[in-house]
Amino acid sequence: MARAKRLLPHGCNFHITLRCNSRQFLISKALRRDVLLAVLKKAQQKFAVKVYGLCLMANHLHLLLKPEDAKDLPRLMHWFAWYSAMALNRLSGRCGHFWEARYFSTPIHPKDHRRMLNTLRYIHANPKAAGVRKGFYDPYSNYGHYNRLKADGISEWHPAFLRLSATLDGCARRYERFCQHYRDKGKSAPQCHWGSRMLKRLVSHSRTRSKKKRISPGQQRLPWDWDIRFNQIPEDWYQVAVRFRKANGIRDGDQTLKLW
Image (cartoon, rainbow, N blue to C red; front, side):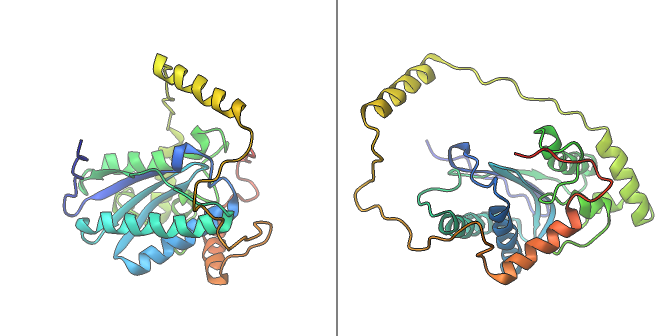
């Protein structure tokens, strides 16, 4: 069956969700998220796109983007997924698919300010809803950019946010109150059908038969075996991440975090 054609209405914002392959926790390490921030910054320099919302989780990411031309979105996301996968595979010494086959995108009309704010709040509430944070602040979410009114080098304030009040301080206070009213709806437990149970038995049976690690013909390790104990990424990439984390990270007086 052919893929459904993407909706790319002109002038719209897009809520993007991109998951790691097989929903593995491939970006749980801070250094890998630093790479994603740097690649996103390079994407801004390569494509005409505004980043309004951003949140990096352990196995997926959320973006609220507005490309200058909506038709450029597939090319932008293809480049971002390809470049980040190449860099992260080199960093972690792995090979193969890093991201799922296709990203999710939802267009939002620029005049639908309520939906825009709801989407922005949903993105910023992801760490809290997942139980990773007790509050909204997170070093890999741009909530601090909206609440502290500090530039992080990547984010821009959304026009719907700027309509909340006549002053920036008023916008920040109203958005903070708006976020405090967020209630996570939660997700229902996944249903296990007979096919899933049978597949699980087959996989476990094949693992017990052979404990040796199988390597496909022609498969080789990448020649770059970076040590993730060190910041072995380009210095300019590292500085992009440092600026973003300083603007958005948890500070004294903020609600504390739970470790992964």
